[in-house]
Image (cartoon, rainbow, N blue to C red):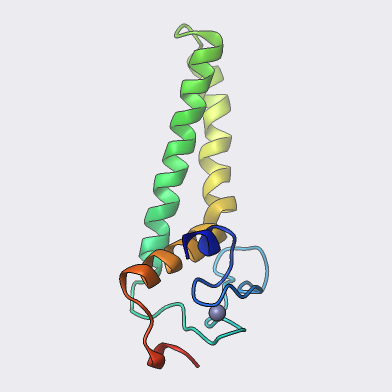
Length: 119
Ligand SMILES: [Zn+2]
């Protein structure tokens, strides 16, 4: 189920086409294959924001650590900022769709969908 979430598939059926386009807030309300309603409770997408925040922060930290491994601890702040800033801005935007399907999979694991959650 988590793999399905990581690969932008429906956690319930593995169906594809969950997004109208690759952009923020473009996920469909329901899975086009099985009809699972993704937002099964108010505030559902806050979990996706949390997942995205954790992954983005980890990417920024990994970038800084990698730079320090390559150039040593004497690396300039400007270089660190020049490397980490694009990661800190780009990863949250690019990872947004994955964070939504991954969070929906985590939510489905914690609260298995009931028959009323399907169209
Ligand atoms: Zn589905």
